Amino acid sequence: MSGEPSFTLDDQPVPFQDGQTIMEAARVAGVYIPHLCFNPDFAPHGSCRVCLVKVNGRPQAACTTPAVAGQVVQSEIEELQEIRRGILEMMFVEGNHICPACEKSGACQLQAVAYYVGMLAPRFTYFYPQRTLDASHPDAVIDFNRCILCELCVRASRDIDGKNVFAVQNRGLKAHLVINTPSGKLGATTFSITDKAAQVCPTGAILIKNRGYETPIGRRLYDRQPVNVVGDVAQVPESEGGRRHE
Ligand code: FES
Image (cartoon, rainbow, N blue to C red; front, side):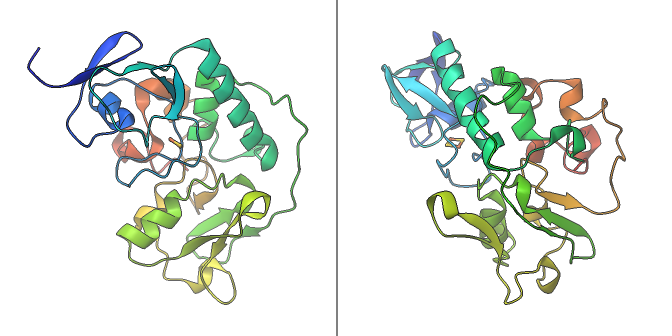
């Protein structure tokens, strides 16, 4: 091996470059760490905590923790998978994620990560929040029931599309996604399905109209291979089953 600095991730050496996080270095090395709010096209957000790893024995978010030479990082251990299951269970009960009735099923990163860590049903009581669905845009639907507040659409619209279509209002339990118009309707914005923001949602919160079931359930992205093999839904080209199969 060259003189590159490295850390160990589950006992395997992972080289890194100065300034990289543990997540970025692991990605380059082809090692999967479960995540939802992380996307390599954006600065780390550190909000979902699904990427929790142990760094020298202490829990840290892999997407925001800088790689340091000699670190001992653990990820694929039962203790962490159990914490990840708990985080995912809270996401599932906090919204209305009815997978069998969702058009994104099989191409949903939330569902795929839940399967990966072995979460099949939440142990907690469902909140069943009353949330709306916005079908005012000619080409897209927003189902607020499925938003996990990863802010990927917020970041994509603001930082890449230059439109600032989305925002998160309030904090804590009252936090929710809003559309930046006086009416609060997507149809009143310049949002387009060619925007980056239309491609980054890891759940079925942003759906493209007139494409439902183009790919039958059972033949979708994560029906074919698990998320640790396929990667993020937003990173997979259309030709390989990503993006369009909302
Ligand atoms: Fe690291 Fe969400 S992926 S906190």
